[in-house]
Structures are given as structure tokens and as C-alpha cells.
Image (cartoon, rainbow, N blue to C red; front, side, top):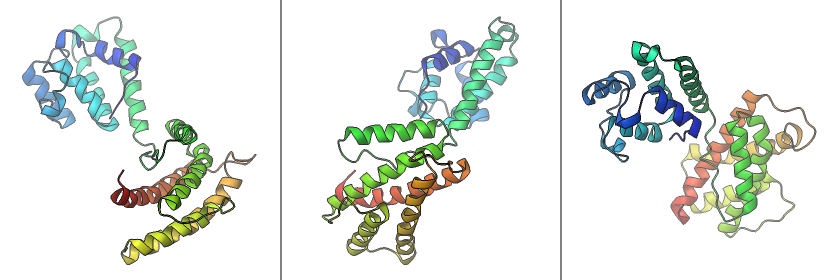
Length: 257
């Protein structure tokens, strides 16, 4: 889903002449054909009808519900079509709108390549947890995974402490992250039969989190360190997120989301 800022929405509305329910010079038939050919979607599908039936309202719904790559492709296709229409190409604001629309498409395409944040859940009411997740989200949105790793480590400490409490497993404040993960994995294997390969990957996660302690202490902003290479940081963020995502799915099935 795409949430456009006010300025972006205004640029799109102006660029594609969406006042009065219209989109450029399209009829109902031609806009349906355009979207089918250029974007690969049926604009008259019911999922785009929640704002109303006009062409502009369906386009607004499309921009709201589709993912970044699809929206970016749509914007580029619509702009390329607008360029073929002299009545629009000759308008004095043509270059300004072109820059705004294509910049938005660029940002959406870049954003679609950012790591997913869905593995990080607000698992209990906690202002510190909320601020932690928001900080990680800001770093990831800025494409700075190397900066996010310190907060991700803190999140993991809180997450696995919560999982141990939820499963009635004792822990103490001196235990490092990998020890807490190890206790959780042992409890998980006890109550949830896993396939052999899954079991091996889950056990190896203990070593992953052990190494994560070192990365946090020596390659993040936790101290005055030289930061990890962004490509490696992205790989670490994605790998740890995959582990968290799996554990979350297991616990959701047991305790609910």
C-alpha cells in the first residue's frame, strides 16, 4: 500500500487532470484498455470502487491499495501518455509536473527495495518499544540499515525476554541475547515438533544472535565504531528479520496475533 504525501497527491491530481472525476482525456473504455495494456490490472475491478465509480476515484483507489512498484509503473505510463497529448504537453506547468511525478515514481521504486518491517511487532503496550520500532523504521526508510542494527539488537533483547515470559521460562538480566534465544529455542523444540531442516536452522539462529552481539558492540552506533558496510547490514537485517518472522508465526498460532 502507498500513502502519498499531500504534495505528491496534488502533483498527481494536477498532472493527470483529475478534477471532475476525469483522468486526462480517457473514456471509461480507453482507460480500462490503457490500464490492462500498460499496468496489467483491471481498473474496473471492485477493489478499486471503494471511493466511487468515476475514473479519478478509481485511480485514487488504485494508488492507495497497490504496492510501490505497481504504482510507480502506472505513474510512468500515465506520464508517457500525457506527453503525447499536445493540449497537456504545451501547458506552462508541464516541466514542473513532470519533475514531480517522475521523482515520486523514483522514490516509490527505491522504497520498494527497502527491507520489510513486518517482522517487528508491538508485542505489548510499551512506550519504549514503540519508540524503538519507530526509530528502526526511520533508519530503514532512510535506507540506513547499518544505523538500524543497534536498535534492532535492543528490540531482539526485549522480544526474546517477552517470549520467555510468555512461555514461563526463567531468565536473568545478565544473560546476553544469544542465551535468551537459546532458552527460547529449547522451549520451542520441546512443545512444537519441527522438521529436521527447520530444527537445524532454528538451532543455528543461536549462533547468529551470538555474532549479532559482537556486531552490535563493534560495528554499530552503540559505541564509537566504524559502521558495517550497508550491503552487509542489509543482509544482516533481512536475515534476523526472517528468524523473528518465523518465531512470530509460531507464537501467533499458539497465543494469537
